[in-house]
Picture 1: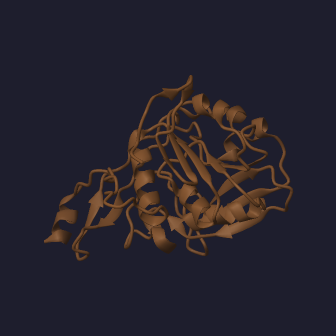
Picture 2 (picture 1 turned 90 degrees about the horizontal axis):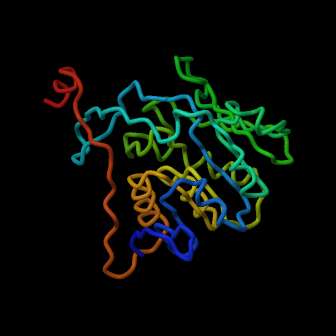
Length: 260
């Protein structure tokens, strides 16, 4: 099915649908009132910190022999306003919210905070050693270790074999682990800020239905492409939707010399 837009019977229509997958291209606050039956909300919302990339990310060119540098990502929509999570934790009986430490007073006490150790025994730098995920799971606090420091990434998102798709992209392995920690037996898994679709891919790999909402169309298209290439069967004769990867430019004479 190709992307679409518009409203059906006063409701916002899905941007994309396949068996087990639904993606809306809209503000999640407009869509959430029409979403029913989700078992788990798993999301990484804007934290309200006006984050801007201040580093360049590596990528490998199609010949797999030369390296270049890509430009910084622009800021994400909504990150210039304080995070109000009131529209999130009511959307499903179980919730796991990245950046819960930025709005912990609004979310309330939790027995189970999940900690993502991003440093994994490497030396400290000017980035955070970990990320905190607020949950309402009835479980002890847990730690997940997965190296993720700028372009230094473990697993399938390693930039030597992959491309950075979103400024706040999360490893699929981490998202699968969180879904398992929730203990849900069925979906859908709901991500109201689905970005490039990592939560949706993680859910589908575990056999759960998934619903994603993303306000920026370019990331909706990237998520659709990932799902169609990795998870969903293509219709006969269908062509995957092109990914609108960030434009890449060399940023210094040093970079240019590396390519000569």
